[in-house]
Image (cartoon, rainbow, N blue to C red; front, side, top):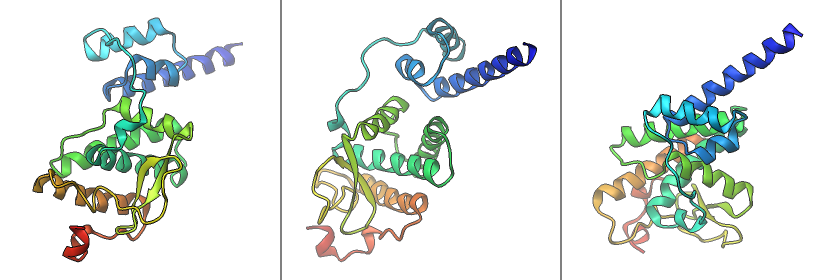
Length: 205
């Protein structure tokens, strides 16, 4: 009986640590309730303790289209490739891959002086869309990196936003896009080609 009680206390403590980690990263209540077994009242108390305010209300993002514009797509692709690597290659659980992958994503943005585009809720929703088979990873025909795309979109001859940013993108954002391509190479262990090394005619196409 004591062993069962001790085990349940240990599991509850682990859940509290997970909740604190998610809250510190900006998780919304819906994310916490979906991923953890703690009661809603306990989660609200934890949120207030960690953030100093009550959890915000409102609906979660519900459209996969948000991840399709070029800059959102680059950031989403960077995070999801990292998440997959941690889950499949490092044998992390879903929750560990989510939190560690998001921290690595934030570190990458900091190192490259880039403003994070994904918050944790967007990152979590992205994973859910992949689980629901609404999205897929599509290889770029230039850099060979894999980028987020709608399920059943074309898989061949597709150029990613890092290789072909829109004309409205400034030099800083184009440089950030190229840095993202190199990040894909580091997390996927693939020979991803730097768009800057492509012929000028190809990059401007």
